[in-house]
Length: 136
Image (cartoon, rainbow, N blue to C red):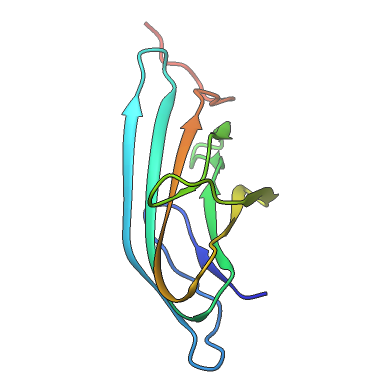
């Protein structure tokens, strides 16, 4: 299988090495972020990719475990609601942990010499743990 990698933190990169003129270009990455009154955060991402050659999909890696310079740890609880294409059809995906990250393996049908869009409505709960709370 041939996969491309989309990294977290607003940057995308680390594509799988080119094989026989295969290239992947992330042509657009957008995130819509809403902070709710209960402290949860709703995030919806859209990744538009240009696949040249034959691909099976792409990876989206999202950092979820952090350590501050002061030595405090915190973790984001991530609940993936869905992964869809540009018209709202569900895309198959697999979710796993890789070190401090949540890794989504997104299957993109027809990713052969084509431009495709994957959207990920994601809910990040307020699940930040082990962070000191400010004094009132």
